[in-house]
Image (cartoon, rainbow, N blue to C red; front, side, top):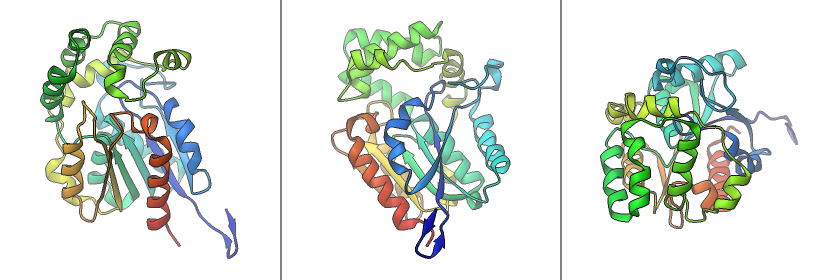
Length: 267
């Protein structure tokens, strides 16, 4: 980018989506606002979104982490920033503990450091959810979604819990590409043992941790825990947001992320 002093390098931000089995499409309306500050790279995990489908057993957090490192090497970047949301935050946290020198910035959004988010989310759903919502969530806990249609129906029923501004009609206008096999592999398998709590102190990159006050599935107590464990991390809790912070408070989210990248960016 041309500036008064000549060419200026932008931060490369790799946006890591949630799920497992989600996709990057919902990021673009908000993260496109970073174009003057960063080069945003959108990624769909293997088997997710627009990426090629494969064997279910390959849809693992381990592979998602190593795929990010392989992408960094392929694109030729010495360091990248990671913006990980929900499950994508778990991937980003794991990458940050494994490859701390390859990270320029870390932005962990509505995520958790361990499998402890699962029983806590079930408790919150029992407190806040309707009977219909609790029933719709049963395949989530057991990892037994049978089709994309069933998974889409789950997100429609649980939508008001995920987002305080949920609009069913708008969500149907912009349907996401979902892979229930990837989600099942996570919730029936590796997410039950996921835990980077004891490794977070290894993260050396400037870190921003964002939580949603009304988040039911990765409640803000976990954002606070992550921030407390990472040296120098900045914690921001969005008071009017559920799990979908980018939908509930998009302008505030963008302002915080832009400020973080500006303050900690390269001169």
